[in-house]
Length: 121
Image (tube, rainbow, N blue to C red):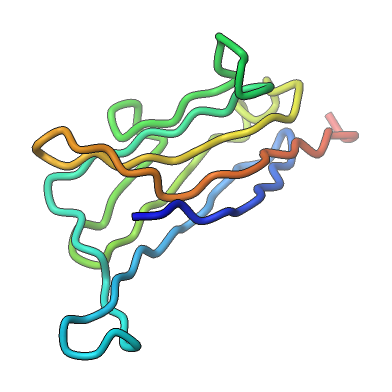
């Protein structure tokens, strides 16, 4: 799987939600797509100030509840609460990875994570 590029805009102090639908070509017709099966997969995403930064700004995982997976429909949902986005102070870069039951890791999407600062607090 080759990662897609998707630049995220996150508004500080609001609930952040993104829904990512993964699809793959069908065996019968490569121009027809079907949901990518996510059975027994987990996911993880980190936002860092720069790629070289040693400390993440925020981490989302299936384990910490910030990522949920609809296995059958190939849907990954990212959620950061309003309280958590209020604590964010800078923009950065991110990538989202999925891990199958055998431990194989695939990068799904990557890009910039732009934080739009909150005025009303």
